[in-house]
Length: 183
Image (cartoon, rainbow, N blue to C red; front, side):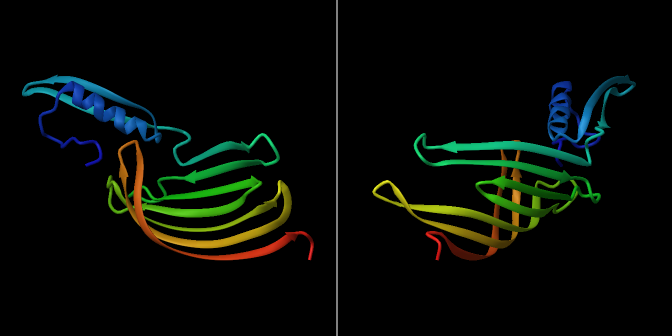
């Protein structure tokens, strides 16, 4: 199971606290209380997660700046919205929007393959637009507008707090348009 603990099995207080830290580290709980009680048969350890107010809906905002300190400068402002725990197994709807040098709009349904399972499946669709420049003798001679639409189906596994590894199939369609020089 996700905590690495089994009900009724012997566990040390340190193992219980480590399990509580892993649960808290997911970001879905405001805190995870660990209570150690003395009982006739020894000790009883109870983990009590307290749901966070932000648990079901989170927003992350970021800024991306790139420059070659000469003539290439790119920027993007991005926002990601995550609706979590949409079903008993912990399904999530993740939406990402990026504006700036690169424009992106996409959404992904992310679904664990069982309660507390590190394995998951996902389905994503996205649209992206960008501009690519070509130079000759340090002079811009061409700007190409590139747009793409994609759909991806994947399966994968979460790797602790390091991230995830996935394998999938993707279908993409690209369209290019000459922007400079004007046709």
